[in-house]
Image (tube, rainbow, N blue to C red; front, side):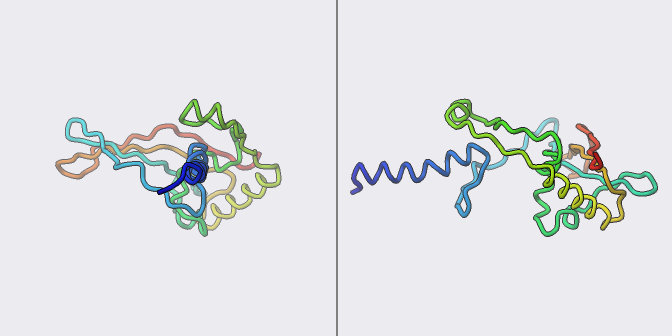
Length: 172
């Protein structure tokens, strides 16, 4: 049987990773269980699947999808979508945490540290080098969200919708 003191200590130990998780930080190493099963919304026999694409500009003037594995190597290609949504950390950096839960936001008023000018310059050089490795023009990428509407009966793509398109330049 655990004493009250042991229970309180255990509660405090387990509460710290929970607070970090609410701040979009991940305690490492840690075992974090999934929050639940994903459910697809079905409407008229179709479902929508969305993802973020990053495109590079060829010398011919044509935009083509970047190979995520080569672009982010040695980092995991699965990080491309969140990195692209955050403009690869080179512009539009928000220093104030915008969390999901108002109570946690009030208790923990963490501020994110913005990258320094040297970090941004280094990131731009790295991004340009990765673009050049794939034969793309340096200094800009196009980021957009693609939603594919898929027929559940046939498994074929019924419609492809491109939205939230923006061009991110690195030469500023």
